[in-house]
Image (cartoon, rainbow, N blue to C red; front, side, top):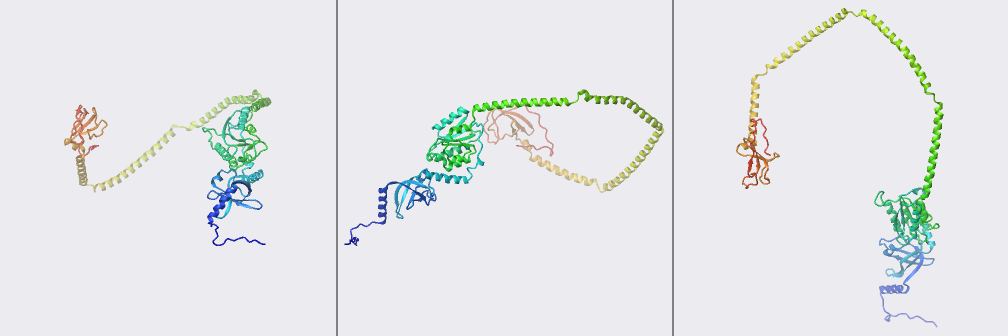
Amino acid sequence: MSTTAAKPTSGSNVAEMTVSELSGAVKKTLENTFGYVRLRGEISGYRGPHASGHCYFSLKDEKSKIEAVIWRGVFGALRFKPQEGLEVIATGKVTTYPGSSKYQLMIEALEPAGAGALMALLEERKKKLGAEGLFDEARKQLLPHLPRVVGIVTSPTGAVIRDMLHGFNERFPTRVLIWPVRVQGETCAAEVAAAIRGFNALQPGGKIPRPDVLIVARGGGSLEDLWGFNEEIVVRAAAESDIPLISAVGHETDWTLIDLAADARAPTPTKAAEWAVPKYSDLLDAAAKFGDRLRVGLRRALEQHRSALRAASRGLPRAQDLVALPRQRFDACSQRLGRGLAANSNAHGRRLGRIAPRLQVRLLAQRIEASDKRLHLATQRGAAALARVASSRRTRLERVAGRITPRLVLNRLDRWRAVLVAQGNMLASLSYQSVLRRGFALVRDAEGLAVRHAEGLAPGTRLDIEFGDGRVLAETLGPGTPSKSAGAVGPTRAAPRPPPAKKPPSGGGSQGSLF
């Protein structure tokens, strides 16, 4: 006997639902049924954050795949960022996207699926940064032998910093600058990178001294605990550091990517403190040894130079032997000198005796007479030449004088005199002295500047008043009653009148200035 399922017929009592209502019901059922889940899978289709800041990708295993989304606010706080092909454990809520009838996982936490995934990610990042040359030995710097300032990037509350400071005090007390950071957690990488770049940004000779060497230190821990020192931002900051950097992260068996980028890698933080500064007692021993070697070397060098000097002195001749031959030559020359002087005097005497007969007064008189005749002849020739030139110039002057008459000269002088008189009259009419002769006066202060107003004159001000016939000195007694005439001054007390100034000649004197 077969049973056939009943099909809904038209007019049945099954309630109708809209598409949105059904999608909402499915969404509510999934969210209420599953809530938060932890899902293990491989990231697939990850292309980085969307323009909106959200991330969309898939989680898959051998048989199935589920869509996943990370909202922008959650993505910024993730410790581990999604990477294509990385196996992870995602924690989030199962929900649906009604727009496409798909269900998806809204991820709120993301972590690698075990140490194997972390090691795979670490190896991949190591190859990438190594290909950029950040781990090359050629770019590593030498550590300073005796640094004045040591910069340490670590946690200020852990046992690491106490052990390092104790090591500095035991070996070589030096100045230490600590940049406190978190050495574990989500903000570890950003804080460590900022500390390295902050130390490098300090200027030499500034208020805060610039370290000569840097130490990035942390105690031991698991791979997850040390993961902040494997981040790219930390590795790039260590590679870019201009200050030599020592990496002391973890114990001797631990390693991180900052160890490869640093200039030196110490097995422990305490060993990093030993590498940064030498031991004070070792320096004293080395200085003592160098001092002993220096003294022995100087003593040996002095002995060698003394022996060489003695050997050289034995090969040198005596002083008497050096001057004996020159003294002998000097004696021989002094003996020949007297005879040479006598022979020279006799030779010159004989020569003078041969020339003396030829020196007669008659010959000298004849030479003087010949010179006198040549001088007389030259004088006659000069006089004749001068007469010819004078005659020629006189003839030219007579020709020019015939064209010059006194009347022409007098006419020109009359015209010049008329022009000069007219200009003199104009000068006299425009001169301020003509104004003074009409009864006005020019007032000047002690500095010779014209005074135009009574306002501002203090009692006792000395004034120089110029009239048409001379000048007087005056002194103000106080402010007077303002008058209708502009430029009037207060009552004055006349000083002794100076001798009148000489009146300039008409048309030829200086006009002066009213200002």
